[in-house]
Image (cartoon, rainbow, N blue to C red; front, top):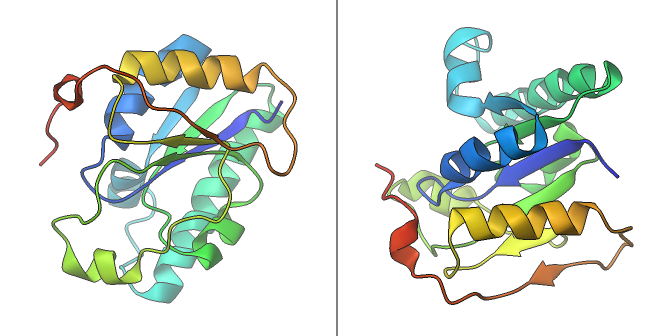
Length: 162
């Protein structure tokens, strides 16, 4: 079971909301990319190279937590295959609830992942998806283990993120 978890997706999709429920449920250390960028990665901008370096550093932070025996969750856009490679091996949760974000530059840059361990669509509450993720992590996974399940909980269960 991979103890390094990446919650990724477009801005405003609900990554932080999901992480705020999943993290305590797993007893995980949370790394919010905006908070990390504002404090310890403040030397980085949003160029392609800086995004790759930010992902590498986020991955390194998570690796340190995992090496100490903990579970680490990083939640950030991680928009390209290069940034995902720089972050490193992880249990990937793709929050795929919207088609476009409010940031046109990020929309142009974003490449959906070709593999994820859990893909969250527009239906289902954050609490329900937390249960799905916990159940999924407890089973062995193979290279094609991709869950895409729709639940009947309304989208309104996800707070609007500005």
